[in-house]
Amino acid sequence: MAITAKKVENIRPTKDRQEIPAGPPGGLMLILHPTGKKVWALRYRYRGVPAKYTLGGYPVITLARAREKAIEALADLDRGIDPREKPAEGADAVTVVAEEWLKRKVAGTRTAHEVERMLRKEIVEPWKKKRMSEIEKPDVLRVLDRIVDRGAPVTANRVLSMMKRWFGWAKERGYIETSPVADMKRPAVEKSRDRVLSEDELRAVWTAAGTLDYPYGGWLQMVILTAQRRTEVASMRWTHINEDKALWTLPAESTKAGRVHDVPLSGAAMQILRGLPRFANGDYVFTHNGGRHMRTYYEAKRIVDAAIAEAGTKLPRWTIHDLRRTAATLMAGHGVLPHILSSILGHSAAAAVSTMPSSTVTKIYNRYAYLEERRQALEAWAQYVVSLERRKKAASA
Image (cartoon, rainbow, N blue to C red; front, top):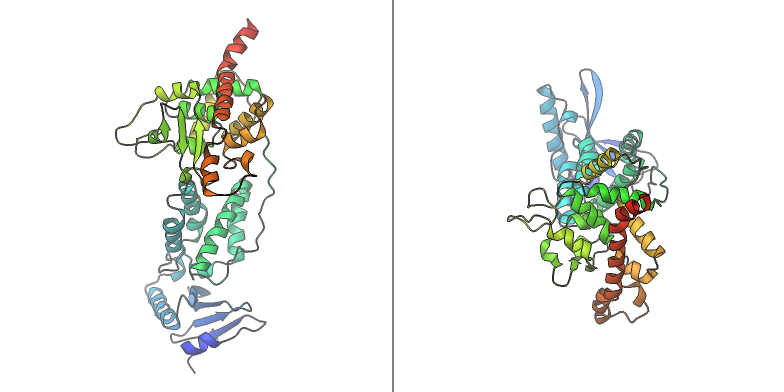
């Protein structure tokens, strides 16, 4: 007897994987996993070789729709087209669900550009012919292994972290019943990053940055002077800067912590800003065209490394984020108290007043807590950085 929609709904799993004929058409199967997961597949022969084409998971794909898709696949076979080679279509296709996630959960966030780039390159591209219900743990492991094998284990960890968010969202939306990455461990062990540049290394980066064209030079020097994250500085807007008060206010959507963060601007920082061009068609401080903020961090790093090498300095491997850690470490070494440093870095709204009652008034106050102390610390830090080259020349004289 032909399987019915009611039977598909009520059928229960056993300890063994089952394949239940679900035609017409012939070859349509309902695959029932011991976990209860139900997937539609079409069994057929292509050029004399047995093949299986996964149509999608139940209940996203109903029995009626599975039969329609099986008929469409058999029609492709009649035309000499292997349905496995066609990009997946429909609401549960990987490409479609990826676009939906980007639109509903990622767009407008601080890391939207990087998340979109990584999702398309590392996840969508290898799975563009698949539906969400087709992806199983071995598929994930193959993707992660390829990333590790090309020498990017940290990227593999980041991709897995992204997958967990994406599959979790897809489960909530009903595209899948279980996440294939729910209990998966990171493919690589990461060492704690503790690189702090020496005074000579910091001098080399600061001096080289001063030779770079806009927007790279100013951006890199502002990363050093403000001790803020590279993306936060890159997304700086002119409307976020109060030139009269020498204050840069980062909106919540621009910060990793997701809250408003005020950064006092030193005299050296203001001098850099005053020398930068402004675009009539945009508000970004660091931009290539005015319409969107600078995102070419790796290009900037490559250019500054070349400038450092050209100056005859050998600099061991370093990252842009090392500059923030270096600023924090050296400021602490120069006597900046931990709660002031925490406020500068934006690690908490105000670590120093964490014992105060949690209220709206306190949170508003915390935003401005120790503003003058932070200003003094950043001004002293800027004077130290700017003096590095002068001190070197004096020492060698």
